[in-house]
Image (cartoon, rainbow, N blue to C red):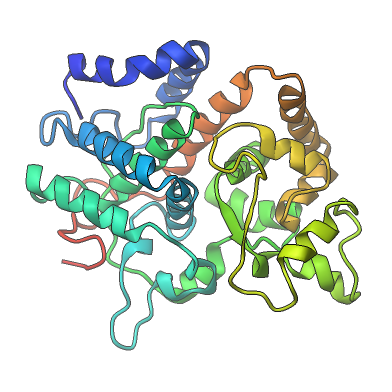
Length: 342
């Protein structure tokens, strides 16, 4: 982490732009950063420029390839939901032992080269100090900030895991074709996340795209009916069918049309209109609590209001998720290369 003066310069542009939101975010971050072994500024003495290096590199990368923001945020989610935030999603398979990368939900992940590039920079500055798991957490924050979303302090001190098993990913990642209630009780609550975390974290779908194959059943054969999902906006279905033909596994569709490279609340407007791509997101409208949350954010979009609530909530839920089942202290290791166990 940078020195105090450097940090002030690093954060100041964001606070000038989003001052009120960030004051809320920082309060939430301080409350939720009490996981033993994790602390804001963990690398203050061992690698004082670690966060500055990540910020500077990500600024260059996102300016050149803005489409990487959503995928890099997704990599952090997929890491944390599978046995905790330990960088296991980054590990390559070994002979006879396919890693998490080989699981169907992870086949479309992108951005591994970016993580390798950052790791190389950090190894050059501070050999054997900064974990790959922490890099993922810091990158997630940076891509949100760089797409006009909130800043939050990231507690660091994670260590890297040495286990990465394909089946673990299959058994721990919430599928887009499950309804929200099933995902909540099967995947979120067992990990210490609640209904608010679920609706807030899914707001991250404001960034990025999805393959047609992740939602094509809602267009052509919902629940085996050979018809479209009746909860999908009937005006939107023809547009999606025009992009996604039956069996299409390659075409990408914006999850937040018109705003998929900007972190904002507009994705909630699409959910409220019946235009969410995934069953897991659309069925949030069936629960009174999550429905009310969605409608509040959708009204922010309609009224061009300031998304203070969502920005603060997203920061808080990211800190909470980023603290799940972490390895600290003498646990795990600090990898020299993020794709390989030492």
